[in-house]
Image (cartoon, rainbow, N blue to C red; front, top):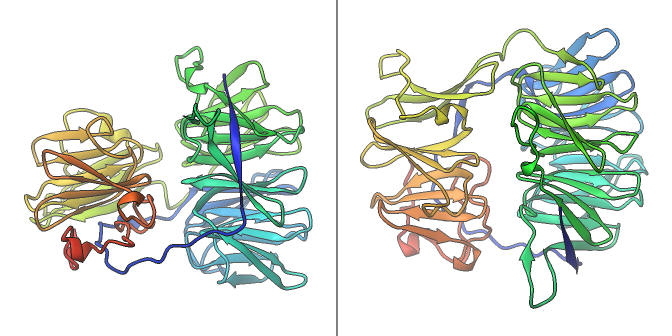
Length: 485
């Protein structure tokens, strides 16, 4: 394992750049059927109940008898896709979505808090902290609201044993807040003449705290611990089980015995500080969140249901009904053919089109890789060629006969492409989380904050190319003001 000594910067004020209104549209993925109570984004516990934030609403599971209740917009939720859930000291549930505020539920009444957004952390004083693009605290007993600073996209937040808040996310390295001062824990280590970047320090997806107040961090490609300024990197991708499956950590939690539980895809892993063990889920599932209950069981939220694990056996909690299969409209090309992604109970993504007459046809991309990639966005260029952006695997170009993949080895600034657009000259533009890439068919270009981007985040969550700040797209002639792909 590698160790890094981080330099620390104290931040009193977050500076916010103004955003220009000149931008181009990428194609937004449109769900044609998206209710899925078994696709779970977050979970938390309340006595004998497990609350699940799902794509379609909220599911409350009774762990004693296996029964469940479903709450939707008909009951009081203001949005269908729920991304986070927390329970405060009074038993009030707090739900966060992508937008439209935070919703609370006291068991009887639903309340929409439009001024708040993002994930919720309940601190030791029962104050609610909301981590969206801004950080806001709310004391519902006194009614006091406090907004100490602006943030990026927060994926993970937790309160440690000293009541310090820790959070991180996309292009937001590990940051702490002690109630007065923000402390930015730099992604660099070493002396001023020997800098080395800690891998994936800006892609932290989950944080947990052990009994020694050490912070454990799960990122896209690794597992780290952070204690008193020292980062230790655990090369979990080098760890393989008997079946040859390598470990990975996109979510993490710690049980009462300080056992670290982490995982991704279809494997749950444990780590006692010395050795690793792996436990395969009963069926392909796609792990999204791991949380440890006080009774010693480990609960796993997945794309295909909720699972509990007692160290020996699994138990599955599954909602029958709508949501077992979904299809998403990607785009309509120049010949009026509709292109879709289809997902089933097994989390694999199959692109197909309706050939303009309603009959399903799956294109031949020349290999089977595309069935396992998470397609996020698409665009159709002037030649009716389709360009598909993926999560972590680059871009796929398909002209109807031939398919070609492009990754960072070819010139993309990042493997995750959140939006795609084509300009009037046929040049392609790809918004990523580390900047914008352009491709004219021969040469690649990279555009980052140094070139005038307000942020290296190449999309705003709705499929749009990022807006530029100091440079206007109209003025530099990159994209016309009315271009839509």
